[in-house]
Image (tube, rainbow, N blue to C red):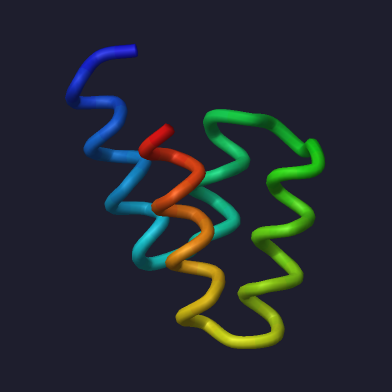
Length: 55
């Protein structure tokens, strides 16, 4: 992936964490974990999404 795509994913991960994860990983386990964390609290969803996208 290019740097621009990664930057866009990270930007989406800050505003809508599950959306940033679903673009890269699809509707898999990573998405469901991110969705659950976002429902429990917005900040844990952002942290998880950024960490998973930076790997």
